[in-house]
Image (cartoon, rainbow over all chains, first blue to last red; front, side, top):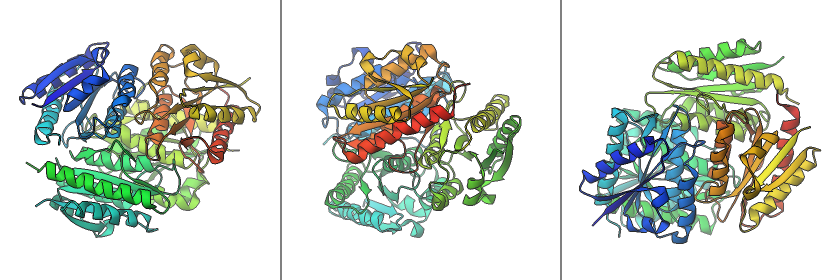
Amino acid sequence: MAKIGVVYYSRSGNTEKMAKEVFEGVKSEGVEVELRKVEETQPEDLLNWDGIIIGSPCYYGLPAAPIKELFDRSVKYHGSLEGKVGGAFSSSANIGGGNETTILSILQMMLIHGMVVKGTSTGDHYGPVSIGEPGKGVESQCRALGKRIAKLVKRMPLC
Amino acid sequence: MAKIGVVYYSRSGNTEKMAKEVFEGVKSEGVEVELRKVEETQPEDLLNWDGIIIGSPCYYGLPAAPIKELFDRSVKYHGSLEGKVGGAFSSSANIGGGNETTILSILQMMLIHGMVVKGTSTGDHYGPVSIGEPGKGVESQCRALGKRIAKLVKRMPLC
Amino acid sequence: MAKIGVVYYSRSGNTEKMAKEVFEGVKSEGVEVELRKVEETQPEDLLNWDGIIIGSPCYYGLPAAPIKELFDRSVKYHGSLEGKVGGAFSSSANIGGGNETTILSILQMMLIHGMVVKGTSTGDHYGPVSIGEPGKGVESQCRALGKRIAKLVKRMPLC
Amino acid sequence: MAKIGVVYYSRSGNTEKMAKEVFEGVKSEGVEVELRKVEETQPEDLLNWDGIIIGSPCYYGLPAAPIKELFDRSVKYHGSLEGKVGGAFSSSANIGGGNETTILSILQMMLIHGMVVKGTSTGDHYGPVSIGEPGKGVESQCRALGKRIAKLVKRMPLC
């Protein structure tokens, strides 16, 4: 049965709130899902999931160092994530503060692992962005991300 | 039946050579495929394809203006490409000359259309890059891109 | 005497409003400045300016095709813009709609020309972003961009 | 008197070799320069330098986690790097392996600090890239980067 991991780093709690909405979105599609702080996540965990969704605050336009470190350590399984499905989300203090580049950086790391990623033609195209605390609109975009990745995982069983 | 379009812009002929290899890669997977110069491609054509692969020389680190113009004009069908599969490739004079950013720019446009894109854990991760005239290695990466997108289209019929 | 060109593409008028504020920002620093629609700008014009500021709506996460075309045509002067100062701004319908990638794409084209670009540690770091019609905050960021580029041009006479 | 820091992370030795060439390039311009492993660099050091040049291997298309961590920790001095000059370089196993995105990620972090960055119209436009061990051509591009940043620091004393 398909399983998705939602991994995040959060200090202010904003990215964590987003992660919980993404988690609910995945669950609502009937797909098994685990919610994990990055500090509690090992590269091995990535192997167990058919879909991986990563959330990070925007630190200098890129994901926080602990997210980066998880990917650096995942090199020992390079090749094994090929064909898995990925998504990303980000929180930040400012519009134009580096949110999109944070999300795209995560998607790039996933592409280098040979993963499949998907944008959306409505809302935040690369992935949900919260400016400060997530409001209703952001929450709804986060749930939509969870649903989108879950649907993609169901449509595309790993061969 | 699934169909893929390979659209390219080429002046020196290098990107065209790459496009022909991508075309052969798709065909070898038994998926119907059309090869088109961007000058002969209309936004309407994008609607007919389940997968869209775009190739461009690297002009100032981005796709050539005619490729950009095709996407700008495609806005009248915004939403209709949701869930289609995409890929990209690029040729350039120099390593570090803007090839990766050219490919990623095309993938970003596809994500904004809600499309699905995939990297690869081996070779040129975001998409094939040729420095000058494509040699055997580049040709093989281009065929691999065609196969990869064709396989993804077959695995993931549009719902 | 130093001179700066502000070049923009605008259909809704939002980017044009931003461009006028950038123009005022440059002028307030006592630097000569020209405001130009991209349709009225030739690659030759770029040679006459010590600083070049480009504004575009976000079309699929990149500058509009006419901006791209100006850069493609500027290749005949490749090398001659080396050391000039550049900046960029963008307008869009949505947060997360591709604004940052639009601005960064313009900055990348400038870097490939060998130009000097500068971010800012406050506000929109890569360059001003307007979501819909520019409000007071965006106007003030646009004037700040104009001042920033003008100051840089004054500090750094072309050698 | 102007001073530049060259900070790098290296495991295979390739990025270190590049760093030494960058160091020589700066020195040849008569500018004081320090060469530092990132493990021996503190955020405080960034305050002492008028120019900062960062080198990293390409790990999943982004700088290695220790480089990212240095920038994350530099947030306590946010605003104090405004107007300093920056540059970046990268090494990788493959063309198309994420080199350009590694360099651009570093430049983005610098822009968010309000720093000034410069491309070059010849060679690797965003910054030098080595595919595997640096050969003569890469060495020469690294020295050119050092010279370029040194010249910019000399032309543009911090006000």
